[in-house]
Image (cartoon, rainbow, N blue to C red; front, side, top):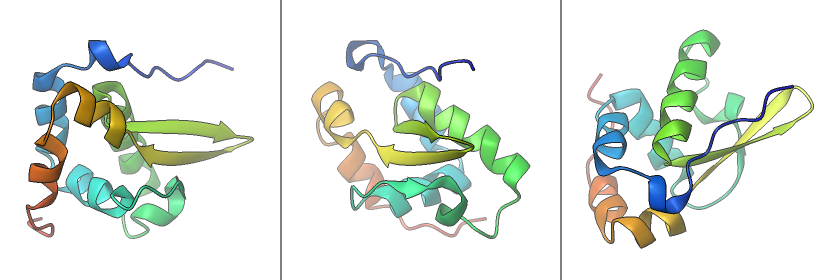
Length: 103
C-alpha cells in the first residue's frame, strides 16, 4: 500500500493552495470541512461521482489543504486549518467567506 503524500507545512505553496481552491467542487469540500470535524470522504459531497472526487481529494491533499487518512478501504478527511493559518495567516478565513454553489 502506498502512503499518501501530504506536504510539510513549510512546503505548502501559495500558488498550489490558490489553484486548488479555485475549483467550485473543491471549495464546497473545504466549506464542508470547515468545522474541523473529520469526515468520511463519501459523505462530504454525496452528489458528486466517486471518480471525480478522487481527483479533487488528491488536488486538495497535495496542495496541503486537507489531510487524508486511510482506514481499511475508507478515507477520512480533515481540513489542515492550523497548517494553513501558520503558513498563510487569514487566507483560509478569507476563502471561506466566498459562497459556494457557482457550478
